Image (tube, rainbow, N blue to C red; front, side):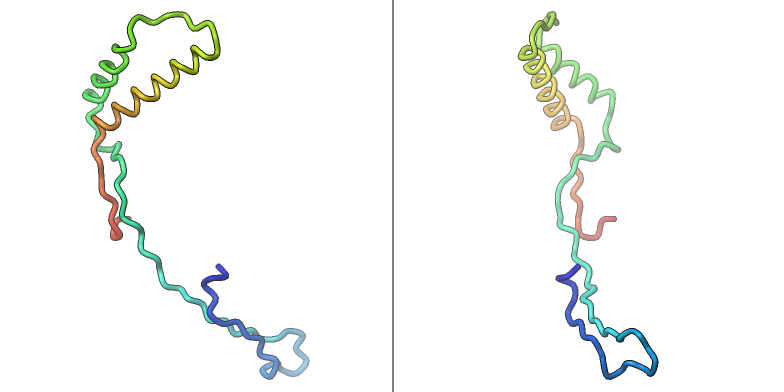
Length: 103
């Protein structure tokens, strides 16, 4: 908030009789910043059946499931699943442009 303060002045001359405080005159810059425009995934508009089919195809490419015996194997499978989800989101989730007038 300090960058919003234009002036801040203690008005000792405006202090009334028997007052234990000093009036402070402060000028603030209250202009609103615009929201930057950016693109975002719109999960509200997703066709979930298409999403599930696309994800199913991505996961089917992993092959037959096997037992995970080490932490490295678990980490590798988690990475593969994350990539499959990210690819599915890129393909099946529509993109919405957020402009400065969006709420």
